[in-house]
Amino acid sequence: MTAIKAVVSGGRIELDVPKDWPDGTEVAIHPLAQEPADEDGALPPEEIARLLAVMDRMEPLDLTDAERAAWEAERQARKDWEKAEFAKHAEKLRSMWE
Image (cartoon, rainbow, N blue to C red; front, side, top):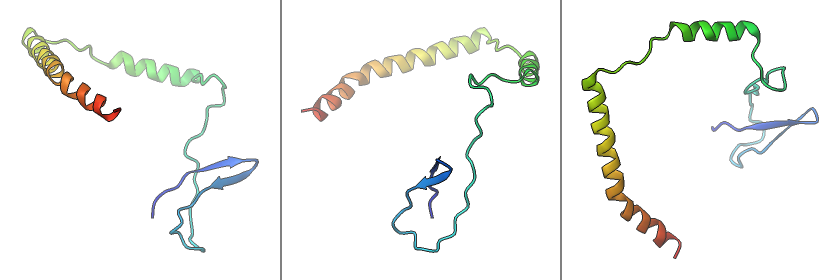
């Protein structure tokens, strides 16, 4: 069976079930997520402190000259490929709208 989503409205659950689910099918309902108590979604001070501590422990991403050159070469190759394929893609899109 597949999962379905439901919405709580006026204290009741509103949902559409697939037609192939027979009467009497048992289901389990769990909330997907809880919204933060703050309307603006602000994090509590403890969570902010924890996130800042994690960010302080992260090492910066430093590329060697060889890594940077390889990255630039791959980036340029991708750019050249996209330019070469653009006309085919544009034609495909154009033909879809005719």
